[in-house]
Image (tube, rainbow, N blue to C red; front, side, top):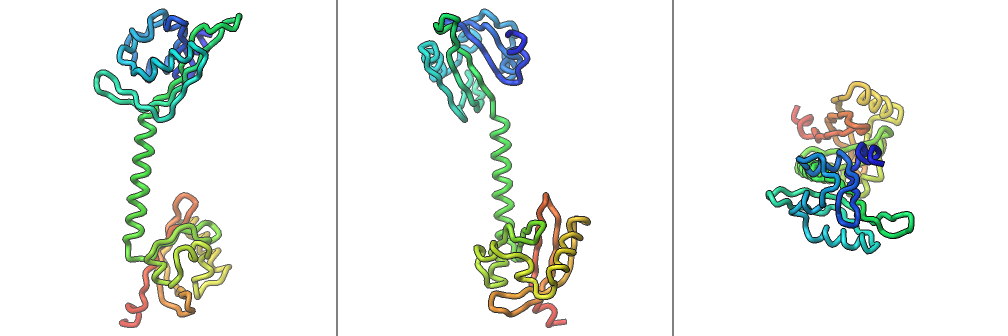
Length: 235
């Protein structure tokens, strides 16, 4: 049992009824920066004197047979540092079914949470840029079905964003047929990029000239479309 728990990839600590450590995993010692590695037999609160009351209450409940747990729980250390944790505290039983102590399963998720926040902010920034650009923006799947579109392109063709999300390239391209569109998509997927001119048709049936820059990115093709009708008239 000692070997199994010690080498577990999870942060696990097993205590007896007197809150002394019986087993502990290396992951537990690492995640909580326990300097003294040999803590077997030591009292839990001697190792963590700054343990918050909510966890002490969970230990008491476990010794009474109750399971406690929490998600995204903040652990504020005495040195001012803060960790975000996920944990569960449950009783373990002797052969006579009496409670012998409790087991604490914990996971420090601070770094992962920060990563998720960073990704979310990155996505928000991406969304803001896409919506702010004057060029029309499309994102399509391998079949040319619209996945995402910005307001600029919606104004350009006269369809609402909701309507465009139900359409595909073949519904707006006035020059290329299904076979040509499929070849174009495959070309972008193979080369990673393509820049070409075509004509798109509006909801009212009128057509206009566009220049398209298409990029293959993570199983999607993102396209920036610029209305060049006036520019061509001036040439």
